[in-house]
Length: 157
Image 1 (spheres, rainbow, N blue to C red):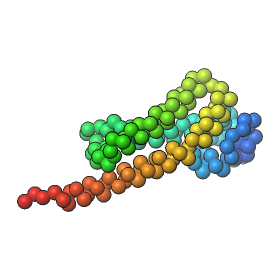
Image 2 (image 1 turned 180 degrees about the vertical axis):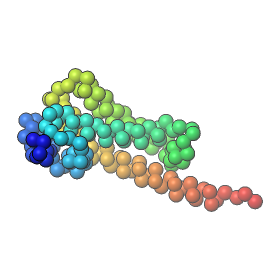
Image 3 (image 1 turned 180 degrees about the horizontal axis):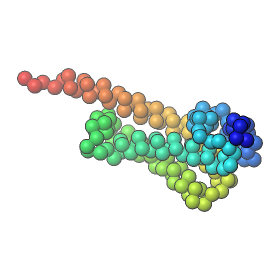
Image 4 (image 1 turned 60 degrees about the vertical axis):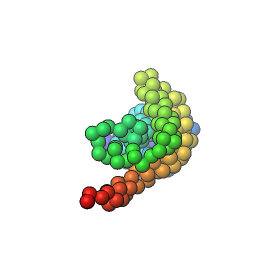
């Protein structure tokens, strides 16, 4: 097997659990780019790949909900969100953290069936999570334009 290239899509399609279509999952979580070289613990590695993206989103959100006073980036971007938006972001954060902690529990007590359930459940909600993150990231980007405008409006004379 060392000389052959590992075909993750073919191996994925052999898994005994009912899972989302490989191409759909790959498009969102870049499974084919993952460093998975064999089918040992394939479903576990796929769950971990999904969880990596959950963790990535959580870290972005944490910077908004709990900004570090010494972080210029956080201080600029957090000003773009009102309290109602922060509450909505907090709800998203809690949902994502539930998935992150579920993945941790599965790592502590490995179970292929639970891996499959995690993948299916997260993928069902992913589109909604992604739409919320698109809104959040756009507002974070726009915060930098607001900062420029505020600087221009400051009068020093």
